[in-house]
Length: 306
Image (cartoon, rainbow, N blue to C red; front, side, top):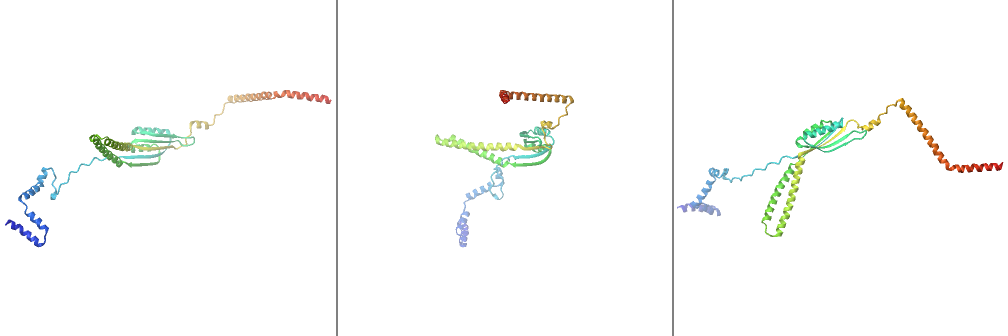
């Protein structure tokens, strides 16, 4: 009777033109009790109680639960490189220098470069390149701007967080590759050729690691210290002390100093005249014998004519 009931749907399906689907339906209906029991056990394994026992979250509709997603790595702290320039007009350069030193001491920074110049008749100018910690960047700008009248001020920033993160990921990947190569070299056969090839690869990977780590150190140090370029000019023309002293007229001399100066000048003139006479006599001395002979010949000629 059971086989007859199973055959009736099959015949009906053949009459309707089901074709290959009839065999599948007939086989599915003719499953043994053992197979149906295995399917029941599989369905029971997807019940909330069984899934809770397996520490798997129940999924609606009997779908397969998603695999556990690993927790993301900690985000890289933001690294920003700050630079600024300030131009000031100041009254006194000495006070400005002292103010710059005070700001550097308060912010725990340092002076990377200093240039002070000034010529007679021009304004004294100074340029400082300052390095301050990034947390003291804005307070340092405010304190330096208060040292004089701000003529020009610019600020710039560059976010290098992405480049730093890329370098860190590259270092991590290269170190994993280096460890793999180290294990391969230890497990390698006694063939010298294989060992040398692996060693060359390790050297190349190590160079890449050192280069990436050096870039990370540079980015971190550059972001940790901000750069401020301060230019200060005096509002008045700068005149050196020696030039200022020479420009002042001398005080009038006293009467005694005038008399003494006149006597000294007269003696000087007399000395100069005496020197001239002596020099003239010395110059004429070689010509005296010739003059004497000429005078003697002139007298003899006069006597003969007489």
